[in-house]
Image (cartoon, rainbow, N blue to C red; front, side):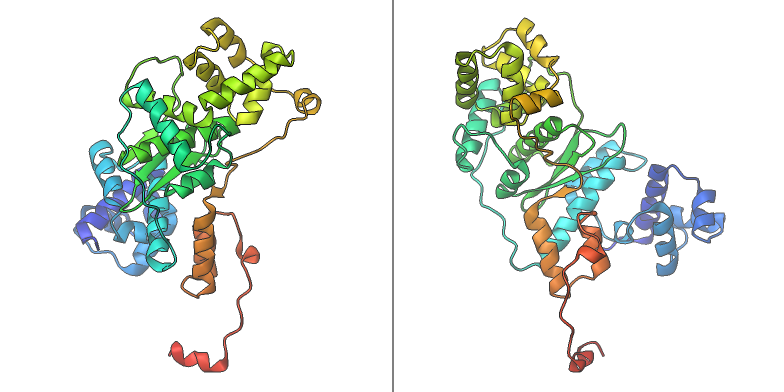
Length: 369
């Protein structure tokens, strides 16, 4: 849907407010009179394509952000929660959703999985059952959920792990017409990034249209939606059967509590807070021992002596592989330019890293004339 002048003006004002710039700042950077910019923002004056391009550059937005409406769930959230325009992560999620919808619309080979109807968990027991159901869908058994980005992608959730800057939320997710998009704060530690993606997967499967999640102290024992999805995320990453068996093997081998925690956190790729809470969830440890586990820090000596393998999963920028492949298909098919491909890939590749395209024959000029 193309937007009218008043809506475009409102979006310019929202983007300017989010960027923390005055009308004078943007007018100067986009070579406009401040009064002209004020009229554009109020919808009194129409903006030309060249002017809008300069405004977009000054505000570090893509031009289509002002011209084409965002996915409905993003719009609903923005209208309900942000009178002065969306926050930083909202802009990132919106851009990611737009990019996925663009790629899907132009790549005929893109397919979405068919998922069974899932009831949102309303209790810890239901959250545990949902985690078991998801593990069954992914054929994981009691094994660790490694390569969580790929696993989420198999369920239709496209992941973007990006550097969001200090003070940003842990993550967010949005439902598309088909499938969904999750954004993870790449500035978090590996275990927290994985927990965040597992939590966003829970929102996606629960059909939550749009959510932004901040980390909360995991001592909450309530049954709110967030608490049950926290439980789901821990159960997905730390399956009961697998965790009990692993802890039992460590104890039989003579490992103390600290060594067991270090081994388990590495094996299941979780942070110590998540491991400690899950051990309490399952009654394997009491709170006093859990506090000891939570304080454990894996050292380089641990990595050497215990022969651990370090995985920096979801290090930014990380994108779902099938999305990356789709972008490259569009590039090879000359549907998008090298600049657009690099933009879509968020720094995973630069222009020099793109594949070489075959030279077109001279006769191909007539297809452009």
